[in-house]
Amino acid sequence: MHLDPYVVDVLMRDLVGHDRSLSAFLVYLHLWSKSGEQIGDPVRASHQQMAEATGLSKSAVQTAVSQLLGRKLLNVRRDNSTAIPEYRVLTPWKRTGGSRPPVHQGR
Image (cartoon, helix red, strand yellow):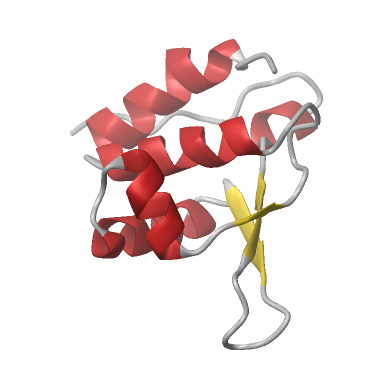
């Protein structure tokens, strides 16, 4: 699996520097690494499993997932309210006809 340079060159700076959310970047990287050969393949993982895999607290993972969903960097599907969620890592910069999404400007 190859990590898209955009993830390190732009997204990391945006999530960690602008949003001040290292946890969102770590969760995104974790799910990316688990999505297999084809980015966007579903990854079934609980918040607890992601916390153990990343070294974050469960509440930090919950906040990170919420941020990633809000930024449209992640999709989630649940079979029912108690099922382990299925996540898909999204790469919106690849669907824009080659142009990159705007980077948030620091204050």
